[in-house]
Amino acid sequence: MMFPERHSRNNIEPSSDFYLPAFFIAVLFAINLSPVPFMAVRAAEIPLAQRQSGFELMQAETQAMQRNDLSNPAMLWVREGEKLWDEKPGENGQSCVACHGVVTGMAGVAASYPTLDTASGRPIDLTGRIQQCRTDRQRASAWPRESRALLAMASLIGLQSRGMPIMPAPDPISKAGAARGKALFNQRVGQLNLSCAQCHDDNWGRKLGSATIPQGHPTGYPIYRLEWQGVGSLQRRLRNCLAGVRAEAFPFGADALIDLELFLMERAAGMTVETPAVRP
Amino acid sequence: MRRIAPLRRMLSAFAGLMMTSIGLGAAGALAQDLPVVPYRIESGGISAPLGGRQGDAGRGRKLVTDRRKGLCLLCHSGPFPEERFQGDLAPSLAGIASRLTAEKIRLRIVDSTAINPASLMPPYHRIEGLVEVGAAWRGKPILTAGEIEDVVAFLGTLRD
View 1: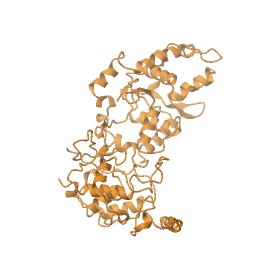
View 2 (view 1 turned 180 degrees about the vertical axis):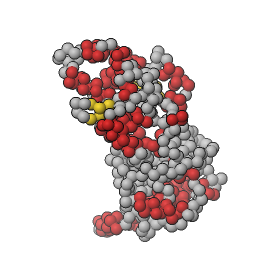
View 3 (view 1 turned 45 degrees about the horizontal axis):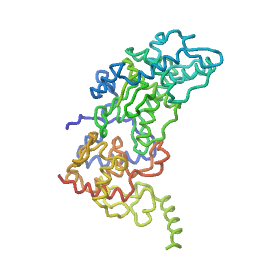
View 4 (view 1 turned 90 degrees about the vertical axis):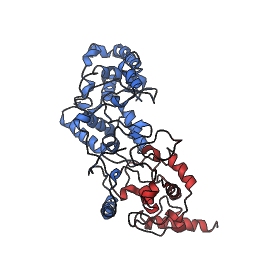
């Protein structure tokens, strides 16, 4: 098997006193070593022309499951979301439909989240906005994280943007969050000392055990994941990866996870929303 | 023996304070109690077996093919016909002993980033300089000194 020529990138190292000696050791031994192609990394970012959804790497059967709404299990969540859209959960009798109208009016919303929450002056993700509507406008209790109802509502709203291009929020606060997210993406973490970028920028398309590494775009969330036998959020997926490299996973709702999502949306700008996607 | 144990623990703790993972050579009995034993890098390798241990190739093979412990086959393939789904992020382990000496194999497992800081390979016997390590794994290397020697012994048998 051939492996492409790679060149080193200088932004993936955590700052630590270890790396200074390590750098000198590396320089010293570089003189003795024969070329070791695996020891370097690929170019930093995925060229536009090579950008692709994880959909492209899936087996035909899984693709077919996503393509047809009648076979896509996530559509069950969407159906539940449609019921919730009309419900009046709180004491003030407000439903989603009362303010927003028919749900098709939410087209394009999910394609540009996370975005600036003007009230708090901080970025907010779609889940956070749904919860805000629940507690502030409907006077109802927030849904538990990863609950079926919350995922159902997020899937329903996400579906309204299906086929539309991802448009990252343009405001400076969201952009600053995306910049922090990019730093996290490139930071080696955990006992296994791996960054997101080392797999999803440098080695997508290759095999990690039985799994084909995708580019890691947020085009289809919430997704129905065969491994989960259910629908889950992007944050759940990010936490999976963090646990996989034996890192301390950020808690659900953490700013760091929203920053990462902001960066992923920026990285996937222009790609097509697939929600609700199916993944292996 | 019982009366010696506390003294040995004290000495171990002292050794832990005095030794860093890179630089000091003397391992000996004290090192067995440390999560990471000291070692010395020379000529692109580590010549002394970690903690002065003799590895066992049979145990090493089990570690290499254990996807939760050694993790090797997530990235590498090798001469393991019974193992499905071997990774392709890294070179095949087949014939590694004809390409690399035991000394060089040992360093690559202990801390591949000592050779190239950009290396994808996790540092199997380094706990310093890691970021956001999960609580269950903090302060522990991926493999102990003895396990590393087992893997080195096994990889040393892969000549073809």
